[in-house]
Image (cartoon, rainbow, N blue to C red; front, side, top):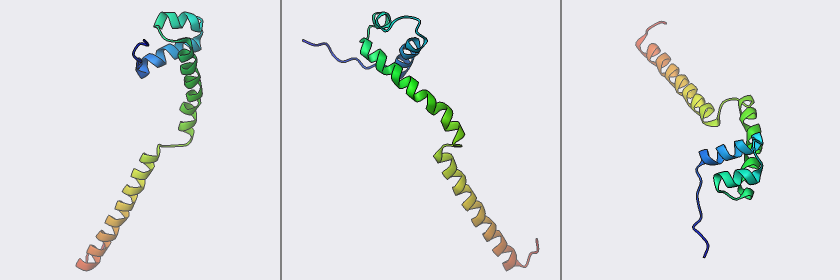
Amino acid sequence: MAGQRRNHTANFKAKVALDAVKEIATVSELAGKYQVHPNMITQWKRQILEGATGIFTARHRGRPKHELEEKEDMLKEIGKLKMELEWLKKKLGVEG
């Protein structure tokens, strides 16, 4: 009967994948050391190499989308408050 499937943490996968990228040992040796199948190490290594380019390209695209949306919302709120302030100044007869 087959054993229960193991779930590995992201930190563990990253550690094993980085060791594979560094080529400090063969995939078979790493599989024995970390008690995982060599195919898993090869898959994690591929994922880390493919994901590495995203780290550098994300910075060139600017801020994350949620930050840009937050900034846009703040600018809208500032515009609204400026309009209200001008309306109140006009209503009260204050020059400014």
